[in-house]
Length: 281
Ligand SMILES: [Zn+2]
Ligand SMILES: [Zn+2]
Image 1 (cartoon, rainbow, N blue to C red):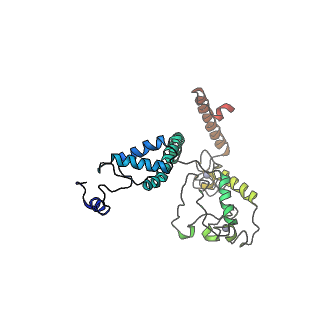
Image 2: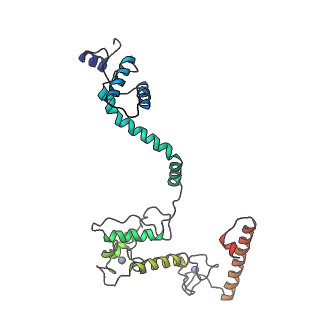
Image 3: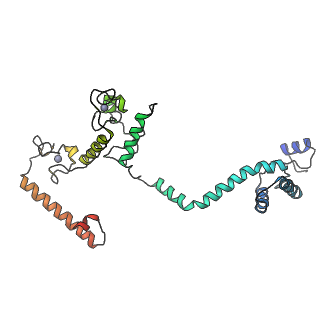
């Protein structure tokens, strides 16, 4: 063909053809291919010959080029894969969008506590030691990565025996259960069972979300101000910075606060916002 240049011209000349066979590339060629396979869903050798003939007949050297039967056959693998992907895409569109929505939501749900246990347990039983996947601290279940402390002493995660061993793993070596120098194979103390560890972690979690003894005067959580006991709060305790009110006063404030909360809950219930607490009233 006279308009051929460069590679095409070279190819045509070398092959002594008016127009050289080229792999499927143009939009029109793909349409022809699709159309043919729609009516011949299970192509055999004779079909590739036939399709090659079709291409040859409508070859224009611009948008359609001749094809060898082997080219058409080879392309079939790729073509059928693409078809499958399209089909799957159509089938899962609804579910797919939901998956995307979940993945792109700002916060993922906290992994259940049990899962975290398994992660650690699994790690100690495996022969090769891989660093444990990040486990968010119970006080910050939405945390997605480890936050390194500025002081080197505190760098790293809590011990695999936490909360039995409260040392940081960089201190006791307890990145894995049998590397802690307090509990386990490498330690001196008898380690707790899985069940004990699980219970202790649940309790620890509860403790870490507990109000201070002096609540609602002290608004800190008990693990923050130390107020698990009356004397220990760093604000209203024995060595606290503020003068503690008499206990009757504290009780009075508690009652007011609780009454206020109940009233709010009742209000919410009236507004049609049903909450578990209001149902109990
Ligand atoms: Zn330890
Ligand atoms: Zn306190």
